[in-house]
Length: 72
Image (tube, rainbow, N blue to C red):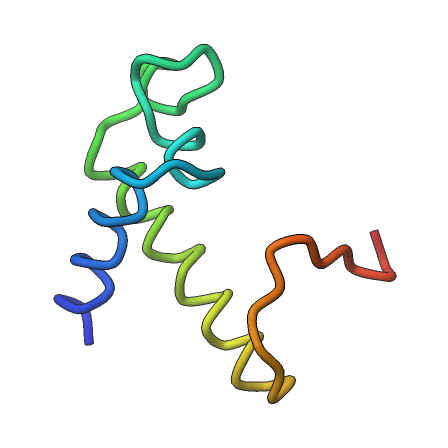
């Protein structure tokens, strides 16, 4: 499972989206640009993927990119 999430995280930081923006050293808001270790940030991306997968499975619904939590 760890290797699958690693590959998923690698794909996520290469594809356009919020996870790429979170990671990218080139963008202004990227964690690597802030001086964080690349592997540390990649682990955080993996964790975000795990949380998203768990939420989808727990709810039994399809993933919705524009979902806003009623608690937020």
